[in-house]
Image (cartoon, rainbow, N blue to C red; front, side, top):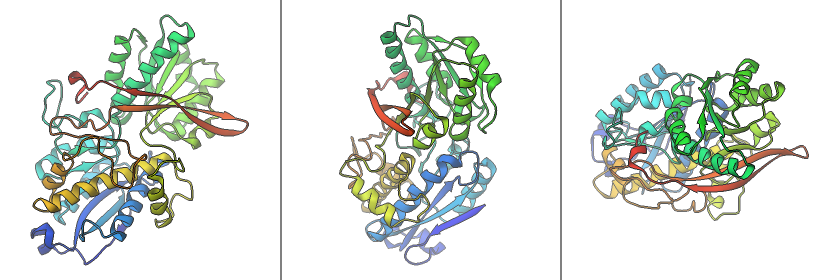
Amino acid sequence: MTKLKILAGAALAAGTMLGTAQAQDSVLVGHLADYTGPTSFVGKQYAPGVTDAFKQINADGGIDGTMVELDTVDYAYKVPEAISLYKRWIGNGMVALQGWGTADTEALITFITRDEIPNISGSYSAHLTDPSGKNPNTKLPAPFNFFYGPSYSDACRALVQWASEDAKGKGIDNPTFVHTGDNHPYPNAPKEACAAYAEELGMTVAPPVVVPLAPGDFKAQCLTIKDTGAQYVYMGNLGGSVVSLIKSCNTVGVEATYMGNPWAGDYQTVEAAEAQNLIFPTSTPFYGADVPGMALVKTILENGGGQVGDRPTHHYLRGVCAAYYMKEAMEWAKANGGITGKGIRDGMYQKSEWVPEGLEGVCLPSTWTPEDHRGLMTVAINSGSMTDGKAKIEEIAEIDLPRRDDWLGQ
């Protein structure tokens, strides 16, 4: 376990934590990061986005003068470690959490609901989006869970909607879709919801194929995929596993379009897999894009910890967005009774089509309400290919999904 603390202002004292937020010199935010575990390929980009952003927030005056003490710990994607850290942070007066993985985020729902601690996570599980249990199919309401971007389920729904149209354009009358991924909460999160929508669109859904999250030789799984005849393969994993799957399937002659979840596509993956037409969703532009908010991102990067080099992936930008949404919710809370967990949660509801100040064009307009924590229903669809020895990515579609009640929490 490794730790990185961003200390700002005076030390956090227990007595201060019990006082009014306005009187605090600083507030504690726990930060679960994966630098060494099975999702570190993207965790090493997203987590520095969060830490660098809060460093910049403090340099710019914090939360109207209150500094944020961000306690970043590499928990290596281990659920027991995440729970242990959460309990320690609660004991130290934590007011909010920047979370990470699906397994630990879902395991902490009961804890953060009881303690009224908002968690803006790197998990985009749709199971986190029904705050009140409005949908009778919701297993557990999650009133203090948030994330920036479309849910895994909605991202996958957008992918199969795109695939359905793509198949029509190619003259494929009865396209087949197959889900692949580890038997784990993260890859499994959208499996049922996405399959149901694919069937609704008239696609045939093949039985899911289990592919380990760790990289390996996946020829056996690829032969199973080949036997299904699937033209569209959803990949619920990330990094080396995605690269291994594409390469293994190319070896055994699978002819299909590969579609990744929000963590499965970036320049590094396209290059390593030598991919052609790798389809994946995004919720920010790529670093260096010509949008107004990129100026602030560049400042954050220049003043940051130097963990991601001079050209971070878009996963870094999502970490920045997660931090700045929390920052503005904290500002509202401070002006309306104090920086408490409940106040921060309520601060997340104060704006619609919300873009944090200074990040225009980087963070897409998002809306959270007490009845619906699906912040973003717009999904950008990208295609990544190796061309002339270089990875090239282009946006090929933007899909606005309906905010269906039966999809809430699913």
